[in-house]
Image (tube, rainbow, N blue to C red; front, top):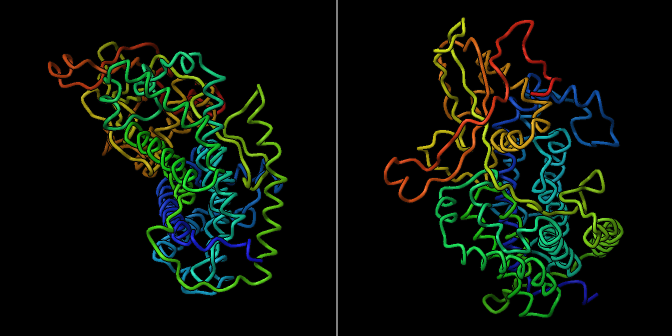
Length: 478
């Protein structure tokens, strides 16, 4: 079937596959370095307890067969090794069936991690990586030309990512329609980057232009992905430029990078490289690709309906394997930045003059003099959830109590998630958490004080607690 392949997209596939393998590497590395404190056997939300409360239909995956921290670590590091092999092009040196297996393994391993990750893995970039990774299994290797159907399915994912995000904005917060959301967003986003302060200080008319350009890129340009070349390449190029702007202005894990990777697959590189000799794909491969394409189209019904629904939801998986999902972000924008500051003291008896020392986080704002760092595409899961906890204690109901308990124990794995532990030798006697209002300083304040943030105490998040019978129960709301 001559229509089945697109020889000119061999370089698009190559770039896409190597970029996706790099994202897999980051995802598995983040899981390996953070899981023990978050979901390990002694973690804040232990996997064994989650497995006892759920069944196969809710969360199918490898850990249904066996779970231990050592086994989970082996899964993560195996995923890292597979990702490195794919970055190096191992799939190009094996038969087609083996190349597909090389891409299927990291997808299955990461799916198993997401299925037991609970609230720590509840964000859209997890489903996006899984959906994109599943389609990558069908792209073939250097021995065969890329299948047209899979290339179209990748554009369908990209369309839903961009158009879904555009629709949730235009239907949501009025500031998107008034073009004023960026007056607040760079200051109140979950995890600012090193340039976010400067983006926030751009002139407000430029912010209006940014929002208007975002609407064009997310609501109009995605339709052009399905136009003939070079229009589709130009549309993908505009999306890449927009995503790079977002990369510079904040930390959004690998969300932007998967989106860029998807856009790269839509670019026609035939003008810059001549296709190598490629064999005719075997019949079994064509049958598999056509069958999976039909499955994806059937599963696309609910996500597509969600796109046009007045009750559109963001970042929802409609099947347990995350094969076809709906996406979106920032349907509403916070006007005020609230941050939880966690403090401890080694004093056994508390009094008005008790000296409290602050814990430092890697990514979330803390010390007003510390410029936020760039971590994306690496994802700091605890830092990200702390932002949500400040918005509403309900987001922290399941894990904040266990987090505090582990700080009171100087738990090694938990402390590895933090940048600074003020009690390196002896655990603190008491822990408290307080909510502060953070705002960016002005140029004048920055020059005078050296502070990037100004913060003001708002309220207690949890009052001082210590280990003992009266300790904050994990089931109680902070």
